[in-house]
Amino acid sequence: MKSKILNFVATIVLAIVFSFFLPWWSVMLAAFIAALVFSLKRAAVFFTPFLAVLIFWAAYSFLLANDNDFVLAKKIAVLLPLGGSPSLLILVTGIVGGLAAGIAGVFGKQCLVLVKK
Image (cartoon, rainbow, N blue to C red; front, side, top):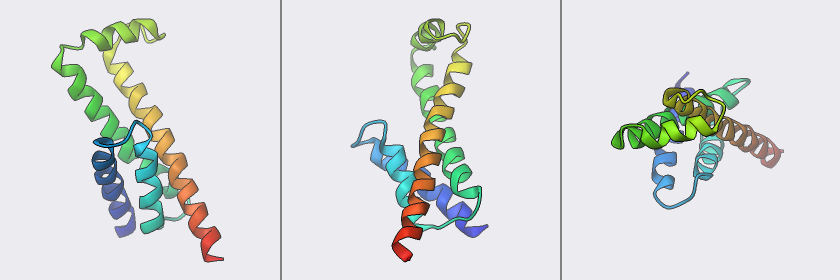
């Protein structure tokens, strides 16, 4: 349980720090490094970084969209088949980032197993 929390916090902190210097894929690097440092087992390898980045990206996109009263988010939600809903766009944004981080977390765990052998 302790390693799950540490991995969760490390993923969020690294994602925030890396997002200042790197493009969108910095969340994958954060999840990869957190998986190398704080090893997890079973489904937690995927779901811990998934939830961490989902929360981070959803909160960050909400803050960015809130600054301009969701004008751009509404326009993008119209372009995508989301019915013009900015809240659904924020959820989809979080899920996409979460999937990227979850896959990177699994890759980090597999690299750790490979190096240990």
